[in-house]
Length: 94
Image 1: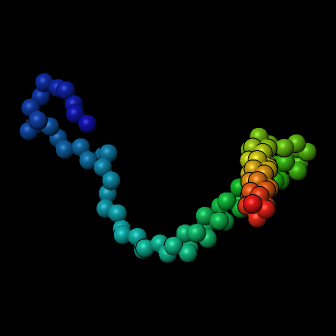
Image 2 (image 1 turned 180 degrees about the horizontal axis):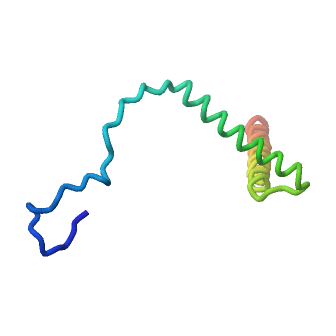
Image 3 (image 1 turned 30 degrees about the horizontal axis):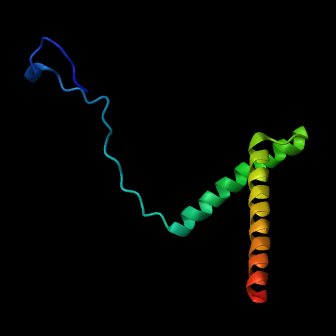
């Protein structure tokens, strides 16, 4: 950050108040531990969402969006399988 002043830079007092002090090195994070922690956090958030939904008796927008996304995927996947079966049947019949 630069300051615009009429004073000479050489005469300004050193202000170290905004600087970070010495930081101790941290041990390396094991990828398995990282994945486990991420899963725990995700499960905690999902549990909170499920509890809130159960309490209210209503579905949250996030849960609704997730259900829609899953259903669209399932429907699209099933349609693709059906189309593939039709094509395979046509190829067998000539």
